[in-house]
Image 1 (cartoon, rainbow, N blue to C red):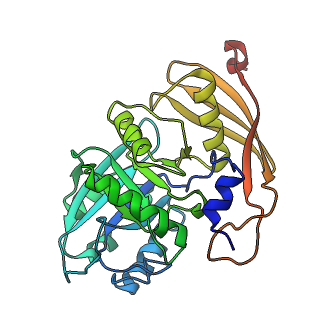
Image 2 (image 1 turned 90 degrees about the vertical axis):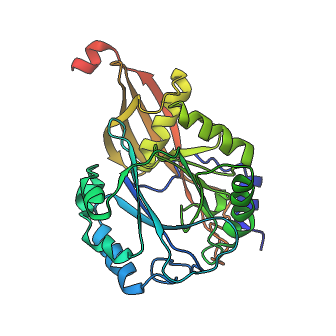
Length: 312
């Protein structure tokens, strides 16, 4: 069977509205090998992994393991980097810390983290605002999908060797068929079918507070219809500043949503997003033998609202 990323690319499957959903990302450095479910199948204590998964459930926090590109020797009890990033516009932040004892993460208030309160991270781990530039997280977990290893690892290595300091390998970003997949923090925009020059352009944009739309899967702060709606408004309005747009209202449900996207300058747009099945059937992951028809999000209507419509 052909690799899932090869088939998705050949079918020109759209990437908009396919990003993982998380208001806050919590990233723990874990050297050594990773299994398919890395929080419980790596050299991290599986009891801790299960406890963190349970604590994060329903809070908006998504936990992932990270490691530096290259060889993955496990040095025992290393000094590990820990990051927390909140991706909701108006309260976007990226904080970092270091610890030799990942058990400290049990004491985090995950509900507060998901809501955008970084004080629990700062107090528990002696964290502070990250000053080292944006992070580029490349999915490389071949135990979850071989495309992530075959396509993601070379990308991560190329970025690191060319001096992109914020490059990390990450365990899972979803959407294997869009490999190489990259998440950029602090804003939380994900990218598919990424190439090194494009990632560098994205990171340059982040430093200037801009969003690059080419290859963008969406902002993790929003549900998938909201991701598609926000990107469509950006394209229509020519708006590339990162924190100017918010998805403030979502009505309906699959297969059709009506959404309102607002701008910090007072403008607003009504967006209709329809869900349909991607045809023909294709492998959604290299680890699944059955062909699937993954959901796609298509913007079928978009118009700017007038002042009177907003008042009503």
